[in-house]
Length: 505
Image 1 (tube, helix red, strand yellow):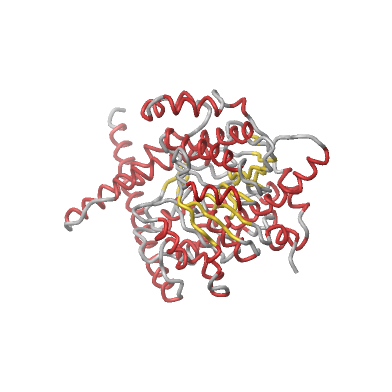
Image 2: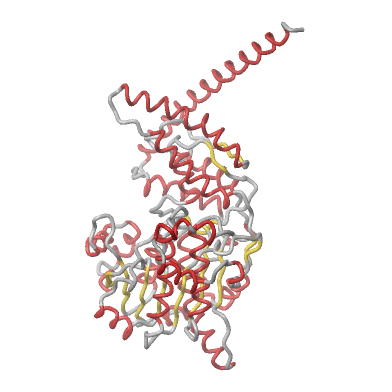
């Protein structure tokens, strides 16, 4: 028997942007596995020399779809890729496909975005802001549209300690309309130079362009049946379709991955700050559930004969089930030791500092200096040096993450909680996103094993685990030995200095 949300999706035609991304794949898999949608159109672009067809065909071998395809081998047949690119002035969609979307689509899930913090402003604006504007203009021409979900970020208005579920156009120096007009009138180089002035209050072009995209929704949505979903830092799956699945190296996962291989030993983190992480499968469930809720809200709005701003759903770790960055580090270390990688370069450990100016100095001793020694060894062996160059990139990313890893935000989630309460008990099971009841210890056990399998590409066998454990023990002994040598060297220097100073008295 179908649940209420499953009935909502039955025979519906869905259009998804960002479907080839981390969250997008999980949304599509969940739609195909739990609903009887009629058709899913997915906008996809050529990337890294692979055509749209090649990228789509590779999905049949993607581990995220393994469970689905094992029971329904032809499940992907109702998924139709459509060539397009949010960076193009017209979305890059052909006239024939545009007409198809206008005639057929009933639900839009707009998740296409660039999530790079250091993206040039002209690129971030084109994809995240103008792309949203163009999608809304297209949605207004969709004759059968019943729901539009715009996927934003919990940090789109991160200038204050409290992030409510409201729009904040007053935080922008210029509104989205003026910024988009400016981007069309000046060169890309000049626009990028204006980034510090335009995004004055924002830590990077990502959060700024996403805030502008929300302003676009506020100004352009009109009578569209639309809502905004703001997820926090998205991490590996908690339960579905498999526990621990992940395919990217963003945020704290990148740090965890670097630590596991013994490359990363220092991070700019406040261990007491709350870590607003959310599993990707829970995020997919929020996105799908919020589309269902849009229809219910639209009906009530029509009956009340009033128009209100689109509903916003914040989604981050619950105050009742807090995960700090210190918890994240400790749980990652505990469970990482159960599933150590077989190609680690040194014993995994991580020291955290919360003083920004001190980080470059500490990083020199933790990373840069050892990196030069390793690269010297590589040169002697006739190999290409690579570690110092890698550390420069790592340090740049860590500093970019600094504003988010050194502060605790209070996320208002009243609308999200109301969404959960409005769902039936059956839907709360099928489309679960109750993060209050998530066991973080169990989660990290699956996530670290998944990171080793899906990112490290290491076999999940006991033999492989034992190889990693033996290597871990060896590096631990070497780690202690090096610490002993450093303590002896430090003690000798101090003894010498005391002796030197004593000679003057």
